[in-house]
Each structure stands twice: as C-alpha cells, then as structure tokens.
Image (cartoon, rainbow, N blue to C red):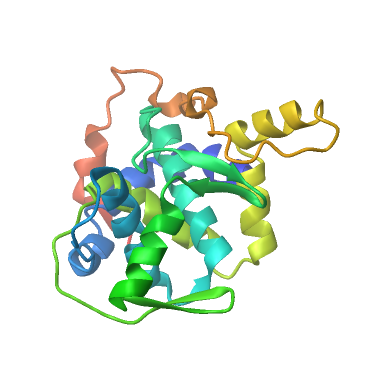
Length: 217
C-alpha cells in the first residue's frame, strides 16, 4: 500500500483527484444519491454513504465509516478546507467515525433504504435523485474507493489511524492510562494541505488539455 506514501505523496495522484470529476465516473454516478429530508449537517453523510454503497457494494459498517472519514481527510488534504464536507468526525472505540453517521444509518433502516446483517450494511433501494455532493467531494470519494479496493478492513482502519487527527488523539491517550477519549472531535486543523497546492498561483491549466485527460481514463 500505503495510503500516505502511495497517494498523498504522489503529486500526480492528487491532480488526478481533481480530474476524476470530468472522467467517466461522474457521468454515470452523480445521479445515484438519494435526496431524502434530513438535517442540514447530515445530508452530506447520507449522500456520501449511499454513494459508496451504490458504487462499492455491500460492506462492513466499520469499513463504510472509515472510507467516509478518509474521503473527508483527502478532501482537506487536497483542497485545504479544514472544515471538510462531512461536518466533523468523532473518536469511537475503533477509530474515527463521521459525526451523525449512526443517526443517518438509523433513519435509513427505518425507511428500508438499507438493511443490516450483523456487521454488514446493504443498500436495498435505488432511486434516480439529485446529488448533495459536488464534483470535488465525489472525486475524493472515488479516489479513496479506488485506492482501497480489495484491501482488508484492517488496512483501511490502519490508514485512518495514521492520519494526523487520529495520531494526535492517540498521543493524548498515552497520558490517560489507556483510557480512550471517546467522542472527542477529530482536529482537522492539524491536516496539512498537500505541497502541490500550497501555491495559490499554481498553473493547472494543463489539466484541461485533451491529451492529459486521456491519461486519466
């Protein structure tokens, strides 16, 4: 693997994140998100969760939570918006989980849109709906799904634990005699924007070149 050496330290891969939105993924996937009534802060979680299940299939609940977290992490790492797009993440027993994740799941159980089989989550209903996600957000989710396709849950979880916010939490816990800081908020201000995008004057006009776009297919 690994997520940080293979993806975040690879400038070409980060540029590719920006271009996925105009590649084949966008055309067939962007309309597959349910747009059900919910609180403003949970709409992105709902849309992202359903998008992942629609495009990656059934999976463990923990994997789903970690993929959402890593997508938001990549979004911050790439675009420098420390708020992210999923309204924050909390420290749970087995690592970071989007705030509101389980509230969204409970609502989806009630509506019958997803079902739970022990530790697995399955998408049951498919609708033609309007997406709550923008191109940059979908591009980051797509990149994370691509990066972790075929990897074990342990590897996905390990990647989440190596992010700056989770490392910071673990360092604090070392002084608490083994106690975990459950429900502590992940500090996304600790995430450093990728060096490729530190320069606001960076010329990325080459990404619109047809020849360059062919390399992304």
